Length: 299
Length: 325
Image (cartoon, rainbow over all chains, first blue to last red; front, side, top):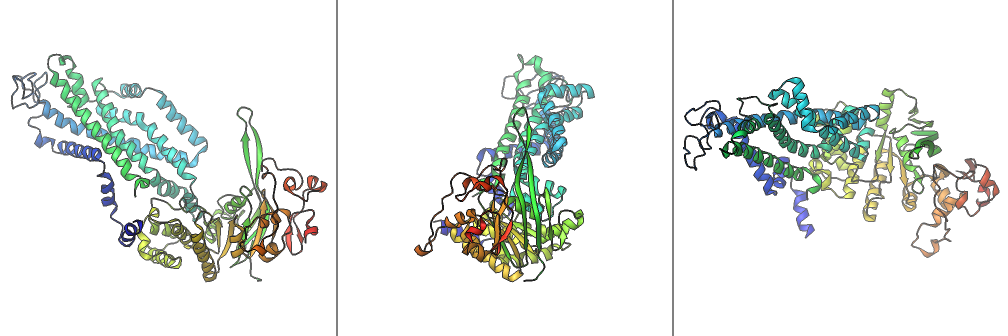
């Protein structure tokens, strides 16, 4: 049995890496669903100007707190209803996708890049440098993350940019620790020694030999970090420290509408659902990514 | 046999300092390798045998310049490899390459075979991509890999094939010495023979010298020219293969050889059972390091460290060597 299955594989050229990746990724149905939701979110964000039925800032004074279309008093003009100053919630959600994804991308890029540099160098060089970096990360981890982010934003001044920066600092230790741990476990393996014997310098060792072998957990952490970043940005927005009104950021939308939660549930529910679905989609896709990228899971 | 040696090692020693204790740390010295001198000529196989923890792999790490010896030095092609400047050391590294024991850990799982083989060229030569590819394919032919395996990942190969890749990588820079650190002990016996044959064919073809580290005496008997038996970081007996295997002198060598299984009844010798375990290199016994397990032990063995001296055509570290000649 094994003979018949192994032989044709030996003789055929290996499949294209992307094709192979998709084969393993698509086995996980949840991950595929997550990926589709992410793609839809990206599509909405990119074409928000054309898709959204109204401008996110237009206030329709004759339709304040109008319920969604399927409820009594709802109209097809505002599919998900309107908020307390008469803005179309659907349009604001669509435009909000743009902000949330932007926050996710920037936060993950910043913290991943910095985390990889600190993590790889401290794992590779060790010594005093490693102690300094790791203790600094421990200090950041020791403070409650949202509180630290709040403090940083409070110092820098409330705005979306500063919220992004502070979230990037707060999630940095996760990437540094993860990278360092993988570097330490990979460093002692024979292929690293072999590379050193044939003359690799420290730069090559760190970023061409060690880093690719440490990427799998980092990619997963980055995908999951995407959702953390969106959540944290929403939390900062909710506390008034992130996006400022009238920006249609999901967290800020929640915060502004809080006082109407008894009267008009849709004002709070839909931004909350948007956050939930997006975060869930990223988590699912992240899990699938981890399985698909692990060479040990391949057959 | 008057060629210049590739490796000339003089009294190589490697000590590690170990911190012990939780609160009151005291530093003690672990003598992983405590004085090894030898030379290897081109086209020659020099085998190092001994049980686990006797310093074989430490020796490999020193010779491949992964670590620096604590004391002593060695020359590669007549150039001192301990005191030379970094640029000269880089050139020397090309001359000495290594094949590891575990073929599953020694190949980068993220790189294709082609990239693994070309890495040494990429770092050390100015060849372009096409030339590197040509060289890699040529070496693959030489070690018995098929050309279409160039773009496969290591996990698609069996242990024996992986070891062929590892050998191919070691040969990419045309080294004069290949350090083989137990290259076949992780393989099936049938595959061991194939890989050993590959080693011997390549030696004939490229006039390679091997520093062959093993604990398998039948393998050592098959392939080596010179043998060094080590015990607790020190060579106990060193000489030509025929001399060592026909007439072992040191009690430890005699015990090792007696423990080798033989198929033929008339080849079997009286087993010499060693009692006790190898002592900790952190706290080696005084006098001869082997005296606690030696059946010929006398008082002098407990007190005086025996010298490494020439007895009957080989070097040996034993007070009573003459008795066994």
